[in-house]
Length: 529
Image (cartoon, rainbow, N blue to C red; front, side, top):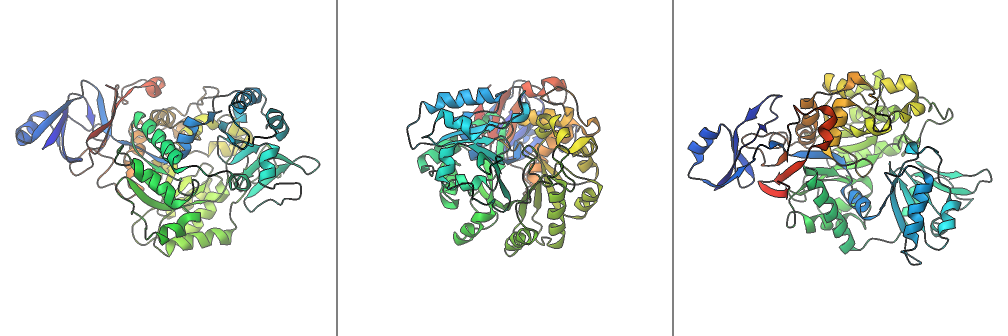
């Protein structure tokens, strides 16, 4: 017995204008899609439930191809600094929170971004020390490639004047050589490694908080990377499995950080294992940092820091060894690479060590490219995991980082598609807002949140292309293009239902459209009708 869905426009996404009147589903799968009269005639004795969309618009379920689900939950539960407009506002929020904590507890805050401040300065540990010398404080930058900590946190982490920079990281120091509390990339781990572990109960609460919010945004699934950061591989996987699918249905595809890859093997698991809703994915590797903190690895120096090319997280031999470790199990990799030097190095290694089992590698971000890098990307079978809202949040300040010439060739989403380089779309939440509607808005407008201007108009996507990257693109990168991302017979009954039609809504109103429903495997996981 099954359900007949009807009463609104239903976009199949098979091609740009393809719509059907009705869809019939059974046991979480689409059995047929077509005209209302045809489906009622064929399945009249099996239909035991009907769902009238009442004029709302149905799409294949949106999937975020790159985010950090538990990190998103932390942002919802911790002090959120992402909307603050000055260092003083941040310090005020921390001052208020400090009074709620006891000695020994850590104050954790997320999302500061000095590029959005009038006074674009980095907070110093001494300012945090004035708020508390007894409570360790850690403020994570929006890119998650930098933190600011106070002296208490430095003391606990044993970071002093004599401490050396770790491979792939940098301890920022003052003129006397003393740490300022500003730690870049792998230097963050010196502090994070000594922070108290999260309880399993709190880990599950954080995971559930995030998933509930993602469903409310119209997301039926997400590709996430969390398994190395919250008490380790097994406790984090168990936290997901405690929530999914018993409390909620949501398709979590879990990338496996290289540091816990052996833990996965020891558990007797490999790519694709873990269950339908907690599926293990590619080995996650970071190859460089981020543009905000000037740690993305560039082939030419930063325009506003001429002695700095960024930071490679691994030596070339080290990165090659990690890819080989994955290849020993015929396992795909998902490599974070933002700068053109990093993208080039990763693409060269993927060309040298191709997969032979039809699984798909991915390069995450690929923001800064050049003609040489673009030609190489066309030679390899890797999907680019791109984040449209980076355009909206990075411009215009990114021009200061890399200059006008490189900025013109960067974030080239339309060029990738034109060159038939496969892509998928995500948010990188909690670094950016998780809403796929905001992502679609950024894809089709390339409008800055900061100054309202349009950057790279030639790289704007069509509405069909934008939606496809959240549906078919996210399915393709994990080899599910045959049963996800389209409304058709044999595909999962995952739907995102919106109050308005994305294809006809004015572009400046896209991110204001109401999500009226999120359906996973034929069940309402979010109902806002």
